[in-house]
Amino acid sequence: MADTGRRLLIIERAYRGSVETQFADVLYFVRELNRQQGGMDILLRGLAVTFAAAHPAPVPALRIAGRRLDTLPDPRETIRTLVSEGAGVWAQDSALAEFETGPDWLQKGVRRASDATFPDWAGYLSVHFL
Image (cartoon, rainbow, N blue to C red; front, side, top):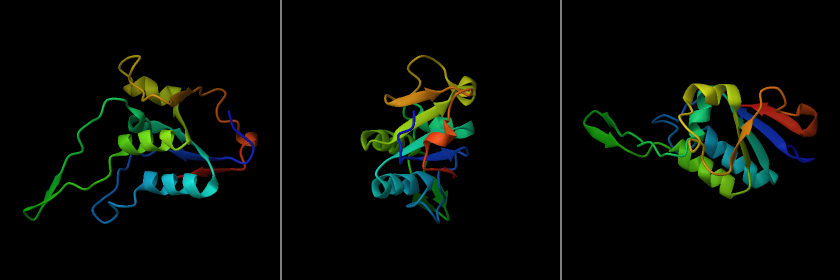
């Protein structure tokens, strides 16, 4: 699963950003690392597997002091972009079991990760938990 020299990033929390960090959520950071490091594998676990859902969910706007804020990140769109930019994106089987509603639930290009065999820690240059 891993190529020599690739790094593995593991994301477990489905935190999509906040008003203060709306332009730089965790997936923005991952996208930049993928660009700078020449390729990453991302393992989504826990609630973060919902980032890989194929069907777009509306990104709700917030109303703060009468102002509408609709610029928060869309993690599902960022996953699509990461796949198109060559990142390997995996979703953990046990977490998928809690959310998956059918065979087309995962986005194209996102692969299932067996709890028993993935990740191959030794096959990565480094492993980071985000």
